[in-house]
Length: 112
Length: 116
Image: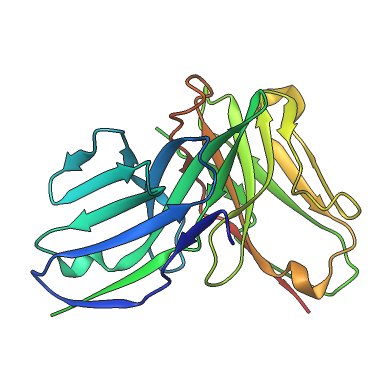
C-alpha cells in the first residue's frame, strides 16, 4: 500500500457543480496535511493547509479525518479555472525528523 | 518579491553525460528542497536542506546524484552520469524553516530534463 494515495481521476465536472476528492494516508503518526494545486506544465502551489477542525477558504473546504486516515477537499460552484491537478501532502514525523510524502494527484477537469 | 529561481529551464543531453541544475531560493528561506517529478506522478523528494545541512537525503540516488548548498543559500543538484530514466522535471522549493510541521513550500518553475 502506498503511503499517500489519491484517485488519479480525471474527474470531469460541469461548471458550477460541487466536487470532492479524498487522499488517504497510511502512517497514523502523520502530523500535518496540505493540498497543493498544479496546473499543466507548471509548479505546484499551496492551496490550503488542513487543520484538525477543518478549514474553509471561499469555495474550498478541507477536512481531516484522523480515525479513517484521510483528508478531503471540497470545491463548491466550480469554475473553469479550477481545472488542475490537486496534490495532497502528508508530513509525518519519524524519530526527530519529518518526512513530506506527496500523493500522485487527482486531475480535475471543469467543463463549460 | 522574487520567487524561487531555477536554471536552466530545459536541458537535453545524451545518456552518460553529466548535468547540473541550479536553484536560488526565496531570500530568507532556510529550508531548501529538491524534487523529481515524473509525468502523472507527484513530486518525489530527493534531498532537503536546513541551511547548509542535508537533513534528509534518503531518496537521493547517491551513486550518480550529488547536491550541495554552500553558504546555505543557492544550491546545485548534479547527475553524473545521466541515464535515460532520469528524464523528468526537477523542482526546487524553499520554505522559511521555522515551524517544522506547518511549512508552506514555494516552488520554482522546474528544469525539464530529457536524456536521449
